Amino acid sequence: MLTVLAAVGLWSLGPPILPPEPEPEPEPSEVLHLEIRGEGAGACPVGADLPARLGVLLPTLEVEVTPEPRGGGPGPVATIDVAAPPDPGASWEVDLVLTSPLGEHDRRLEAESCPVVVDALALLIAVAFDPVSAANQIDAARRAKPEPEPEPEPKPELEPGPERGPEPELEPDRSLETEPVARPRVTAEDLPPWRSSSADARGRGDDAALRAGLGALAGGGYGPLASGSAALVPRFALFGEGWRWELRGAWLPPLVRDVGDDRRLRFDGWWLGTRGCWVPTPGPVELPLCAGVEAGSIRGEALAPVLNARSGSQPWVALELGPGLSWSPRPRLAVGVEASVPVPLAQAGFALDGEPVLRYAPAGVRVLAGIELRLP
Image (cartoon, rainbow, N blue to C red; front, side, top):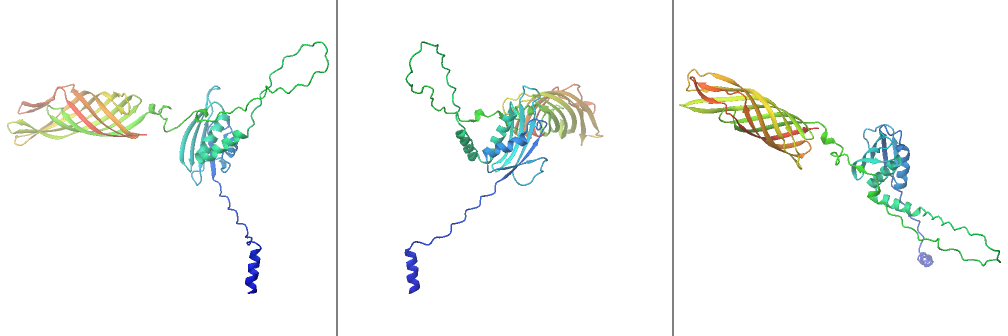
């Protein structure tokens, strides 16, 4: 009973005082590894100035300058390639490859001076890690900077006049007091121009670089003989902006043709060719217009019931001209269709028992469709 009364008495004096809860330990900050390279790194101290600028925009981010490439590893990495301007009036060019919690970023910067390059790099990296915190730091720095006071207007000098008695005290001139000037907010247009190395590859002239292609086509048409035929065509191509050159070959699968009086002739063939193309590009498609030359051989063989049947071959040399249509759904893949008109430079054919039964067509028609793998 005494214990209960004592407890009640102590509680009447006030609730027990509990020890304060321990404060949570701050989470460890991320460490950004900077890799600085390029022939302009010595002229522009990016490695020395960039960590200080990042410390102002994003205090929670630790920055470590890595003199050599890390070759992978944990933590975010920013690789900066600095190119000094070739002429005194030219711009600095900087390539930035950044791996941050928001993903991988690939940017190219152009600026008129080294300090502008450092400020732009610091702003891009800070926004990539924590855009909200970076915006708050910029706004806080803008408010903390004192407004410059305007210089007072010069007062006109007074000419000396006659001596007078003591003049009354004048009130202070308040005409010089001005309202605080609101500074404009920093927008994306105020930053130095930058371009993405992947999205603006066309602007840097990458489309004009030499590329190669490996393709396979199949189709058929009329010719080389005055009959229908099929063709399988592998090809190798080199191409650039507005032009294309191809080296191709073809195999004509065997076909059997009835030449009358229960006589039949089986023929096949091959040819190699090269051609050049002018390639206009209206939008996402290519419209090559090509001309070339091809040479090979057509082989014919008589079938039973012809007696003493023999096989023979005739040379094939022709010029060909035709348009095409190609579409590239991916940078390394293209699909297309083409049509051409081969014209033989020499007439030839096949005969049975001294009687001509099948000759070359004066002109043929060939339609092919296929795919192409483009490198690089």
